[in-house]
Image 1 (cartoon, helix red, strand yellow):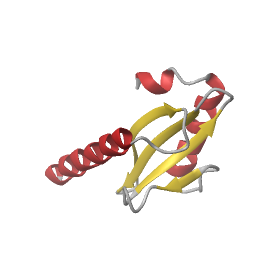
Image 2: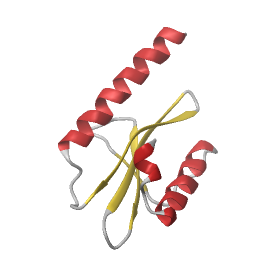
Image 3: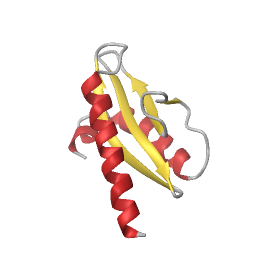
Image 4: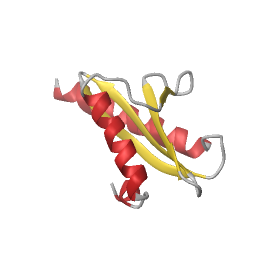
Length: 100
């Protein structure tokens, strides 16, 4: 994912550690559910002095899937990022159902 590679090194380290925690069943240090807008999706959060950084993920069948990564300058998650995450989650669920 090119987007996350452009995040500052320290932010990438924090978000990567939180993804590892999610993968191993531990609770990420800074995460929140995106329900009711995106049931089943969680948001990993980090920030520096310039922006807020987000990783949206879902855990399905014991696997953590990163759906979307972005940075933002305001407190509110932009509707376009919510919609993109929703579409990617839907596509993922369709793909997984076909693989069964």
